[in-house]
Image 1 (cartoon, rainbow, N blue to C red):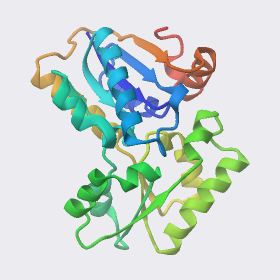
Image 2 (image 1 turned 135 degrees about the horizontal axis):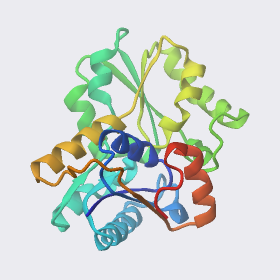
Image 3 (image 1 turned 135 degrees about the vertical axis):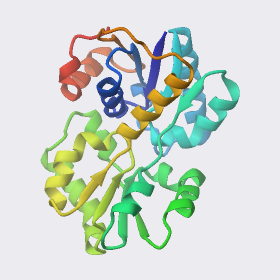
Length: 257
């Protein structure tokens, strides 16, 4: 029995990396829906249909818990998945609460896809945790595609990062939330652009901890001293996906198929 993890593409590998670090003995199944990436801009019904199909595939592969490692898919589908299937789901939530606790200037920026920022779930999150802090949202079209191309620090990617962070810095944001699972792969570039005084937050580690808590509650944690396997699947070009995931997760090259 394994932990299933899926995303519109390779972004969820940033979450898999944190789960692997915390729970190295667990077997993982990763599904990249690369043929339909990016999810941002697609109708909710289409994202829901893809999330449902991938969930059924992961269950058939033996997943006992599924991590929806995509902010857009979490907003569109996680409540439906929880109501439909008799297993636990972990979704993504932008790190607004810890960002609000960290800011010194009282201004927090959120970098995300337009679909994630428009969702009702995100607005509920703001209402719950923003308090007296000003939270500025910034849609980032094109960044997911750059990560999917493996361009993590090229001139075009840097230009996009500069364009999207400039207005947030101009309004004195000192904490930036990386509200898409693709963006942690751009963390070194984003940090270089915004400077050391700005704190970057993502939720991969928190999702890994929540995964651990749920497995503990179910008595389903692997106790053996072993290194779990990773099985890789994609709806897109398998060779291109293999090259890209080796770039993004070189420490696990060769695990799984």
